[in-house]
Image (cartoon, rainbow, N blue to C red):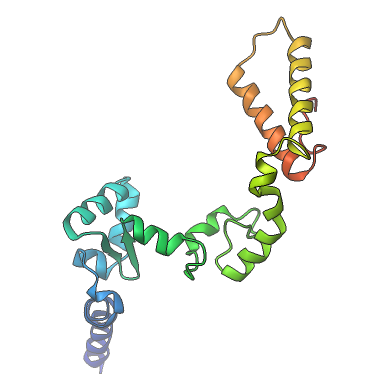
Length: 192
């Protein structure tokens, strides 16, 4: 009885972790190292040692533009694949990788996996990023930038005898301008 359970357990493990990825999975036809095809832990080890990018690049050199890098993951290295997968209206949903960019556990325009939700949110923001608005100095951008430039120059004038790290100052100026553009100028103020 114990032998039967042991044999069935080993058989199940071999089927699930070896036979299925190499002989049954639809990804079996994609070239790549068999070690990467049967376990996600090989790629995790590359991540741990900081060699993932170099290893995947080497796999592409050995196997071509499409390489299987785990039992359920494929890496592509061609421009046409990039456009097909990530281009507008591709139909491919984003992977869980993007969830690390959620804000306080909530999805945003960048992290929505579902195309429908992404499209709905994009419609709300599209007007602010239209070519005519971005290239136009009227409306929101010009008065906001002029106000922030004046505030920034006033701040420098008040502290003219103090050494200033210009990189940090311009960083905060940029954040104030961007935040003001996105959320209204009361959210990005140099004087606070």
